Length: 176
Length: 176
DNA sequence: GTCCGCATGTAAAACGTTACATGATTCG
DNA sequence: CGAATCATGTAACGTTTTACATGCGGAC
Image 1 (cartoon, rainbow over the protein chains, first blue to last red):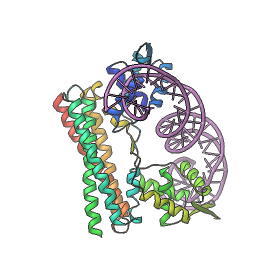
Image 2: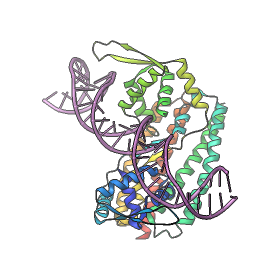
Image 3: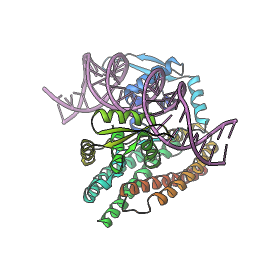
Image 4: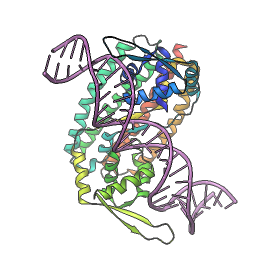
């Protein structure tokens, strides 16, 4: 149900097509929410049925026609009500990497260390990209407070993973 | 599909009923994987169909009868294969709290600060309980390496959230 | 000439949540 | 006297993922 509010939030800034919303999702919200294009198209359809948004088709010659969505007053109201509610669903995390770590007693310590080192390398690249994205997209911190705060959280979480990797690798080396 | 391996991992240590596995899930795996009892019972049934585990019913007089699951050689093999595969699915996080933070530009800064302070209080309690759990359940770090490493990660993540909250609150106060 | 981006969607399968159903015992 | 624990599951519903489907234009 939160997907709906994520989409309404994006439509507050400007009208958009399902395709554009999908891309914005990929860029901005990726740290803490993901959605496939199929899901976005379906949810937009339901939102239009509920009168929260309206769409109109824009004809294009070189590209396929597109359907632009525009938020309605009832959509704005629904978003604001959701925002003012302090109750949140507990976050749901599914991390198969941590699941494997939880079973490190079943594998060779050298294997475990190799696993973590590979993960570290991978996440270092992600962290670099996150920092670049923040610099590029949020030079003005005041205008996009929400995105600035969440992107900072994303960066800190990634740094936390890297620090934990170092700690875990050191611990495993000691155990050998 | 990872639920299957989580259950196999738990069954490596000792035989268990669906009910016991559900409780172990709640305790140990809660930071990075959750499952309802209905899901666990369904998956165990499928795993038995696939020959990864076998069950036998234990008759009880005072309590309802119970069905104890025991891992098979093919189950152990499947788990080890999964473990030795370095490929992991990207973690999936759905955090409606961060989604609300992402929309802080639409609400009053004082409201935003109140929201974060409430969240901070809530997570401080969780952190305390996580630390207690770690002390109680993993006094011997060598025996349960996997659990020790993941519980440490859980604690660090929680601390990271609290630190970020402090930073975000300070930032919002400056902006006022 | 193959892949990427543009742009939309349907259908089915898999996974996750909530409600319903039972019924004894134990603790406050 | 009510709530929690023990113990299992089905059914219905909702959400998420994957596969299928189309088709043009531009870059390498």
